[in-house]
Length: 394
Image 1: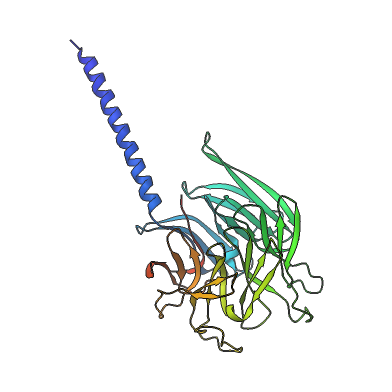
Image 2 (image 1 turned 45 degrees about the horizontal axis):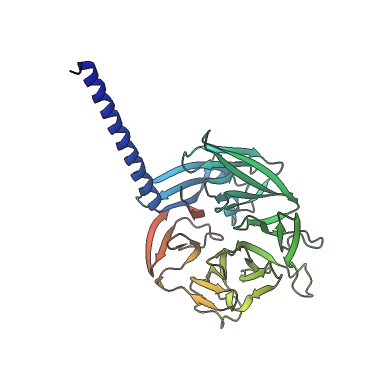
């Protein structure tokens, strides 16, 4: 005959095991629901004035398809500090594989916040002002360009301690813009400003990380024209998914700008300027597949100059695929004509886009949409100025 103590102990063990099993099931279900749901990371900017000081507030948020939003960081920047960066404050933020990276108030501190814990996991003060940050969502690495140097930040998860360790390496010295690490992690493509006649002129270079070498793919010059008047400006850089092609949105000085897509093949060195058929590109250009890039083409109200006969509906912004092997364009269907489509981002099961051009416009308020199976769904409205956004999964 069992004693009362033995019976109570057996009941305690049974209940404990049941609770553990229920907890594990709940955890797995929760994880499956979280992974199945859409998550969008975005940066929202608001202009503020306080005691005569004009500054900008940036809020980093993660939106879930359930409607829930997580605030993961907030940073205040004086307009004196970010003067000249207003059009391109997207350069100061990057959505990575496990963390989001951003600049501190004085633009010299590099800060990373973990998606899962919503806590800061890395902070480092750079020797000079940070100009650009980009993320590689395949490798979990970040590329940082300061005023004088180019860096690569690697991270590694330590399961035993449940933490990430980071290592920062200087890659090159010089003035670089829009640095992007290739999907295979072997190359960095970036703009370089080293022309002695004009420090605004920008060439496209690729740095081989294994060979520690640099190669110029697209010149900052256009033919024999004087570089003080006609030179290349780069607005965005993107790799193809197979790490073979680099595409840029680019222009020469003009007001308003006439922007087109150019592509370079790093395996052959061949370059292609798709000036006529991709003109009126609204940055950025992004990878769609191994041989196609996606961008927004058209500019409502832009009728200043030029021959638009090669451009379909030039005064409406629509999403376009560029086949880099044939040079042909494919206009993406399914988006109502009353919606101007900008800033495409490729997700796991659809194309995301906005209804305002975030790179250039400082107007407050826009919406983020998703196109899937030729159907458009409005996901969320951003109250402030949308500075940066991407899909995240954790």
